Length: 248
Ligand SMILES: Nc1ncnc2c1ncn2[C@@H]1O[C@H](COP(=O)(O)OP(=O)(O)O)[C@@H](O)[C@H]1O
Ligand SMILES: [Mg+2]
Image (tube, rainbow, N blue to C red; front, side):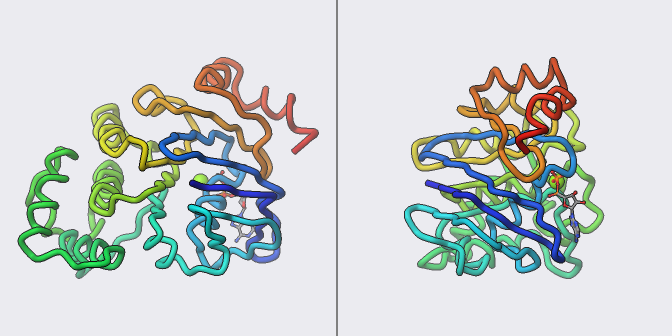
């Protein structure tokens, strides 16, 4: 599904990703954990093709295709999706309008107004959202939890092949965390892969990862199964720095 090979990327001339390797198979859920500043958000932005970052080396292959030269919207049409750590507010554009535009942008054939309405109702039920929410302006005045729920609603509407979730769990209370996890588990299956980026392992109790990777200084320094998340909880990121700081 996704292969990242020796990826190097910088922002404003500062190298942040320094030779990152990752392979995600079809139907797999990968967790990436790492201390603040290790480059997790940079990785998700670079994967999605954010124009502020400059890729200076390596490759990103998605479903067998080199995506490096593709714009973010082209990557989305191939089935990539990024749930932002800090979703932006867009006053004047309602959630329903935004989702309709987003869904039609990635589909070959547009959905009718009725189909769109039904789809939205169905997915909002999954996310336990009040239907009136759809008429509010995108993220304007939303609580942190509502913004994250809305990101996952968008993901359910778009049905991506690969979801990258950048600390979607940060700032969520347990109720919101469960709903967000439910949204991800809803898509779970042989056609869906996810990269769940997180600082804490709390969300991994609800979304069980197949693989866990630890990121430090712009690289993945160690990988393992879900037990690695428990080791991290026990030993903390100081252990990672001591153990892997010299290689990173
Ligand atoms: N515009 C910038 N110029 C220089 N350094 C930056 C810039 N933006 C981010 N960084 C640095 O890149 C590093 C990685 O940031 P980020 O990807 O947000 O990490 P994480 O998401 O793991 O906390 C941090 O040390 C941060 O200070
Ligand atoms: Mg981040």
